[in-house]
Image 1 (tube, one colour):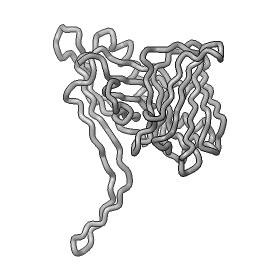
Image 2 (cartoon, helix red, strand yellow; image 1 turned 90 degrees about the horizontal axis):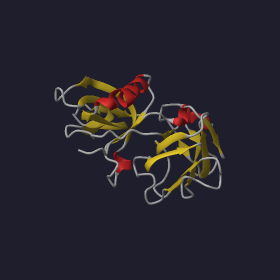
Image 3 (cartoon, rainbow, N blue to C red; image 1 turned 120 degrees about the vertical axis):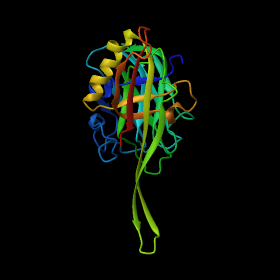
Length: 259
């Protein structure tokens, strides 16, 4: 399968200067890798501007996402990249119809190609939000890797619900739903030799320290923002040579949604 899967881990949100036009809870909370609404960037009203400024200019950007949010499906999210002249944005994307997915609380946009820029702004407007404010626990902005060969057919996706169950003397069950966590068992069989050290090794080093990784199984899917998982990645198999001397390498991992 041609390259349509995306992996992203070099998150400028964690290492850059962050400023926000509104903050009831500090914007620095975006550097916390938990997806809890109690440790989030929260605004005073339903609109705000987030600015992400890396310490080194002319960085490569490709994918942007907000996760575990309280945004409604009618929120508008505008991502703009700038290089030097403020009057000449390099890329502008506005959400709306492609905005936060109901029941998922996440919105993702992917540029058609890499964009080199000095900094990024994300304008969020959600005037119909019943809570009257924005709560954004997790955000990603930065480069991405689209391997030459995508996920294999034995990749699986599922949900692990956590339910507290009490059984009465008569056998009746009383269930209390606590939370559900999406996960995927990732299987790649077509990494090229040149991708192992340049990309996969860097992903593994980053993931081993605990930061979240964004996994989009199919960037061409009309529902890729729903299918994407942002969370911890743990390798479940070493890099192997599935086709002997051929320039193909395999690797398996599990990604679990960060709650």
